[in-house]
Length: 239
Image (cartoon, rainbow, N blue to C red; front, side, top):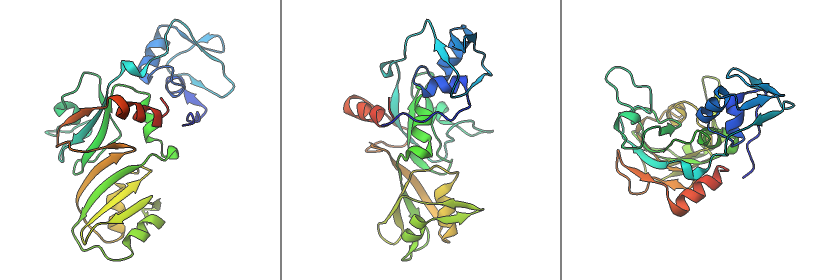
């Protein structure tokens, strides 16, 4: 996989993360220690760098993926990905994972299924950037009967509130169930697309992210990515 292009100008901590030198949190620590310079001047947290700037790092080792955790997690319905309000619970409140591990991306409260948990901040941009085209697959149960032509319409794109929403692929499995593959992650995208086709989502479950599958996980369970599964995941996001 080619390294993701840097969207210059960019904050110095994100630049270091995209270059694979440190996580964003780790980059902030390096900057505060005075280990990062931009064109010979010590960097500050608010600095932005352009394509012509010279960034140098001293006194720090390149992070290794061996230093991080990567988990597949089954987010239950009713749980917030993060930042819960009032009596809500987030993944951080219920998942049995090491300190510092966080969810990459989101699943809305009424949706369930696979989400990647890690403490490696380099993963976020590499996994979620829509320009990289990473597939995410969802199993959707529809309240109404699915009529012919819906799948083709979703592949072609449905406009909602001035925004074009498009599925990479759609497979219908009977009168009320379909699998939808996305490579972009616009807010409530599947619910909005189906609403545009006058269909109501009864249940929505993410079953795959790239080659990581939900498998036999039950709601609330985690599975550490090990061996070939870990190697393939890291390879596919360029780490």
